[in-house]
Length: 251
Image 1 (cartoon, helix red, strand yellow):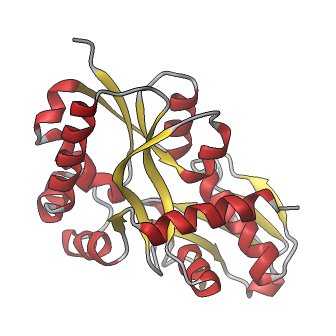
Image 2: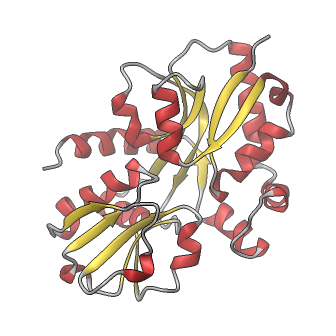
């Protein structure tokens, strides 16, 4: 039987999912790939994978899709690992460099600029070779994932984008969902969700297996338990819908 290709995000926040998939019966049925979020989206859209932990910002690009799990990468309030960073006050920011690894965070920061902060900076895509330490006056950068852990102590002003969203709209934020553009067997979906459940309930073990770890094991466990919310519930579906509505209204 041909294995189902699965694209998972390579960040620490996905470690419980990856652990659960590797240590459950579904693993024999899949080829598990690790990518940054934008690549997860590209591979699913191009048909290179069958299932993806898909950034919600990419859902609008798909003519049809199915969300096959009640697990996600989300947050209720601070997420820590998606942030706008600078050494300036928010009102003084003239240029924002955008993380090439995630379209969702790009859309989110634009929504916040337009609807909450009332600023109109220039947006410039960040290149992989760019060094965040070279930011000059009136510049800021959006960083996501594990790179935030390295950068968060370098800047005097770190704005948690998920927390800003929560304070503005009273809703959690969803960064990625398990989605497919194909008709996957129901038995596979059942095994998939059993594996994801195992992982969410095995955070300490997932951290032990994750490498490279850029923060202490204790800090990583705290981050996964306190900042990441893995259940895709009704409030999170509301948040996805609002995000898509506000995205469509961007200037």
